[in-house]
Length: 426
Ligand SMILES: [Mn+2]
Image (cartoon, rainbow, N blue to C red; front, side):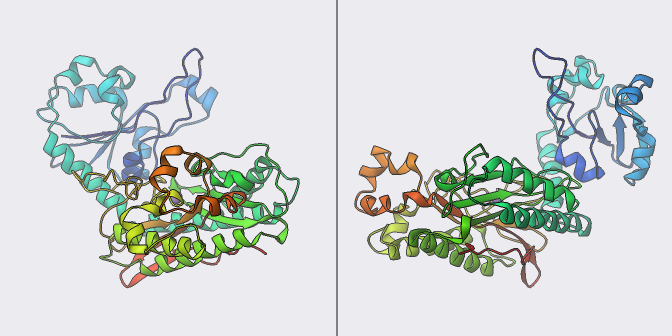
């Protein structure tokens, strides 16, 4: 028997509220939608069955009408839909269970109306669970037409947001104001909220890889880095652009933006079936290292610098990740594969061979990060490779990242939303 729960809402301690519910993406993938308490069950020889909570009379008063499990199953193309309170009877005494999805059913079976003893008596089959997990991950990783259609719409809505934000960015505006413009435009273009918390950073704050917007005001000549995407039908877009405020930028800002833009375009061109994501990362590292040597920030032979991971002082993350129902989507590493602890590879979120139908982000960047440039250990370890004195002239740049969502096609690749401008705007 296979069991894939969606999860139940997590209560906020000390209040009567719950954290915003996000159902497990496996269930959303299999069902096309996800509600709290959904459990998908499969018994060999029978179709998948959806067990879902049946809304009571009071639920309709507070939350509006909710369809019954039978209607939802039909909508999803399943023949079976049953009330959640019948689940106990179905799974009691199951001989062996292949388990995937939300783990909370094992930890808090009561939340699903199950007596702990029922779950306690299950024998979870590790091999069958791994096989089930791999099968679901495999089908999430290679996008079908429905998934691709949603992702194209998410990218289009995101592009509209990026354009609106760029048009609205000017001296005196705050990061938060621009984030508001961006997200409003997502929804105007059909978006259903953001795929992840929008990153909108101005001036030197653009060095913060996953920073959130605050009340920092933009100045002419500042870079604005926007890493943000809309979500549609659960599918995410993830796009980054970096541009200058007021149509002016320092020579250092122009030079850094130029290198990143060139490298991003070059790596996108390499995306094709049977290409390894590690090779893409290494191509980006090489291109950025060459650029850093040209800028006088790294010293020495590029091969030696790469062997020593010197470029990670300015490029401390991976080239990209798979994209789908999750922003950092599943399947980046094959089962049992170990993540490298090497500085240049430890934040690489996908390390495998590309196949048609996969969608991957390509997002090189260069940053002047105080936490690295001021770190005494980094300074002593890298003193032969990095010209820290020269780096002072670049601190005002902050950081530049350019990111696109790239579909692997049978013959190469397609950049989703290719017409969203990547230039600095000066
Ligand atoms: Mn990304």
